[in-house]
Image (tube, rainbow over all chains, first blue to last red; front, side, top):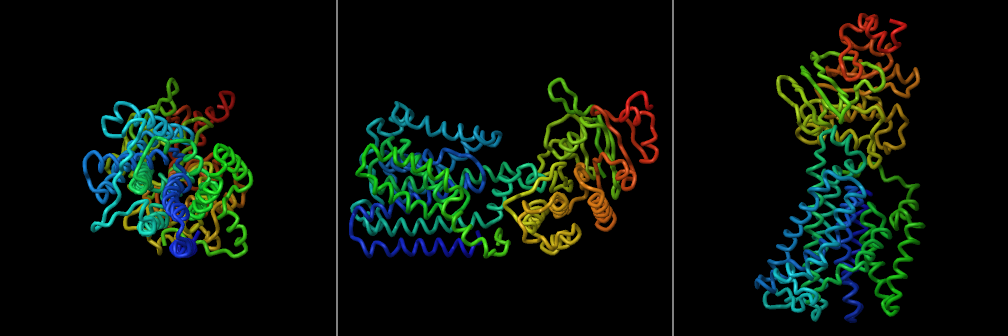
Amino acid sequence: MSLKRMIAILGAFYLVMGVLPIFTGSADHLNILTMILIWAVVASCWDVIMGFAGILSFGQVAFYVIGAYASAILSVSHGISPLVSIPLAGCITGVFGIIVGLPCLKLAGHYVALVTFALHMVLVPFLRGPLGRAIGSGGAQGILTVPPIELFGYAFNADTLVPFFYLTLVLTIIFTLVLVAVIKSHWGQAFLVIKDSEQFASSLGVCSYKYKLMVFALTSFITGFFGALYAHYVGMLSTKMLSMDVFTLLMIMMVVGGIGKYPGVVIAAAITVTINQLLAPLGMYRPQIMGAIVILLVLTLRGGIVGIFEKFLSSRPEGGISLGR
Amino acid sequence: MLQVEGLTKRFGALIAVNDLSFHVEAGQVFGIAGPNGAGKSTLYNLITGNYSYEGKVVLDGRDISGMPPHRIARRGISRTFQIPEIFPSLTVEETVHVGSRFGSRGGVDVQHASEIIDVVGLGEELYQKTGALNLLGKKKLMIGAALATKPKILMLDEPMAGSNTTEILSLMELIKKINQDLGVTIIIIEHFMKVLTDLAQVLMIIESGTLVCSGKPAEVIQDERVVKSYLGDSYA
C-alpha cells in the first residue's frame, strides 16, 4: 500500500477515534475506545514482525505482559515514577526481544514460533513462583496497587477516562507514525526482502541478522511500552493477562486486518475489541464464539479487510513505487 | 583479482569441494563446468559466504574468507541463482533499488539503477510486480539487482537453465555486454558447452569437488579427462 493511502486510512481512523468521546460519556465506551488504541499498536507491532519481516513470532502477548509487569514492579517496589518506568519497561522488553530474537536467527518458521511461544509459556510459572515474587510480581495474587501516571499533579487512570484516552491517543499516534516510518524506510524494505528470499537478499548486501534483531527489538519495545501504559491504566495486574483469550483476541485482529496488510490490523483492533465487548454477556461461551470466528475468518478472509479493499481497487493501480519514498 | 586457495567443504562424510585452487583475472569471463553433483553450486556458496569452509578466498589482495554473504556482496562479489530468486512483494524497479541501496555505499544510486534496468532490458516492466515476470525476465532481474550492487565480479549460476534458444542468445548477448561494456568480471557455471566456449576465456572442469583441468575452452573440451568425466571411460 502506498504511503499516501496508508496515511489517509490511519488519519481518518484516528480522527474518528479522537471525536468519539465527544459523543459518549459512558465509562464502558471510553474504556473500549482506550483499549482499541492500545491493542491497535500491539497488533501493529505483531503485524510488522510477522507480516512484514515474516518472522513467525508468537511472543507478542508475552512482551506485552513483560512491559506491564516491569513498569508495575519498578513503580511499586522501587518507587520510580510511571513517567520513567513506562519507557524503562519498554527498554527492558526490548532487551527481552533481542534475547528471544538471538536464537531465532538460526531458526526458521515453526521453530521460531515454538521458541517465542516458549517465552509466553514460562512467564506464568515464573511470575507466580518464588523468583517472580522475589522481584515483586505479587505471585498468584498479582500486583493490585499499580500507581497511575501523574503529570503536574494530575493523575491519568481509569477514574479519569477522558484525559487518559487522549493521552493514549497521542502516544498511539506517535508510535503509529514510528511504525509507518519504519515500514516505508529501508528497514521496512529489508524486512520485506528477507521475508521473500533471505538468500537473495543477503547476496545483495542485506544483513539479515541485523534487521531481524532490529525488528525484534523495535516491536518488543513498543509492545512493552503499551503493556506498561495498560498496567498504569487499570491499576492491577495478574497472570490472567497471559490467558489464551488475550492471545486469541490478538490473533483475530491479525486475521481480520490481514497479515502484512498494514494498517488493516488497526481497523481490525477496533472491530475485534468492540465485538469482544458485545459478546461479554455470553460469559463462558464468548471464547468459543471467538474461536469459531477465527476459523471462519481464516477460511473466508485470507487477505483480511485490506484484502477486500485491494480487490475492490484492483482496477485502479496506484503506480508501483511505494517503498522507501 | 580473485584467488581461491585449497578450498575444501565437507558435509559429514561427503567431500563436496576438495582442495580446489584457481584464480580469476580482472575482466575475464571464467567458465566452470562439470557433471551434476560436481560441487559447482557449492563452490559458489563457499565463495559468497553461505557455508563455512577450509581454505582461503582472496579478492583484490584482501582475505574475504569467513565473511558473511552481505559483506562479501558489499566487497564486490555478486551472484545469481540457478532457480531464479525474486522478491514477489516488490516491483522490478524496487528490486534493482534493493541491490543499489544495500549492496553499495551511499544509498540508492537512481541514475546507475536506471542504466542497469536499461542494460538488462526491463525498462518496460519497471513498475510490474516481479512475480508477473516470465523466466527470462526473472533471470534478467536477478542479474540487474546483482549489477546494482556495483560488483567487481558477477557469479552466474547456470543462467541458461530452462531457457530456449532465443532466450539463450539473448542472455549471452547480455553477459557479453556486462563484461565488455560495464567491465565486470564474470564467473559462469553452465552446462551448455557452446555458451562457455563462446563466452569464456578460461574454462575449469570439476568433478566430485576436485579440479579435473582448466585452460582455454577449446583445449579443455578436447581433454581426455573431460570427455571421460562427461561421457564415461568408453568415450575417452
